[in-house]
Amino acid sequence: MASRAGNPLNLCLIQLPREPEPNMDTVDATVERLREQCLSRGASGIQGLARFFRRLDQDRSRSLDARELQQGLAELGLALDMAEAEGVCRRWDRDGSGTLDLEEFLRALRPPMSQAREAVIAAAFSKLDRSGDGVVTVDDLRGVYSCHAHPKVQSGEWTEEEVLRRFLDNFDSSEKDGQVTLAEFQDYYSGVSASMDTDEEFVAMMTSAWRL
Image (cartoon, rainbow, N blue to C red; front, side, top):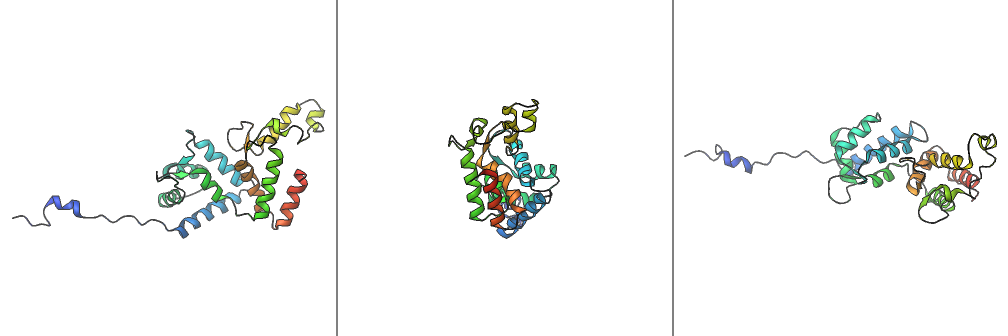
């Protein structure tokens, strides 16, 4: 009689060791490293990463799998091994699909901001969003952002419409579609915020810039 150990059917009873899942501290350390790498590129580093990933999300699913995350970061010169990419995806997997919720991940990647900074960013966005629909467009900017004194308008090189559109492009991190969401506005100012030491300095800058 064949021994039990020699029976190939018993192979299905053998549990192969599973690769250990990274704990939350490890994932947090990974995100912190990515944040530092982005900020080392200047105030627009986080915005650039957000723009890249939103463009990578071709099917508008607002999600990425571990392979897409790893390859996307590699294209930007940001190194993440597969175990780290899988850990990050699991952390921000909202529906159990094994994919990363893109907006939640980008929100976590932004440098932490105080309530005072978040509030003044939201106030500036609300002032721009005259229609109250959560999206700032050229129509919203008219009457809020004056551009008739812009040198290129004065010279006739640009129309006021072109100035408004180019102004929006500073914040628009997707397809330059002339629409800016609060998330894109926050992406832009998260990098600016990281370069300013105190809440008072940041709030004063925003208040002056947007005449709040």
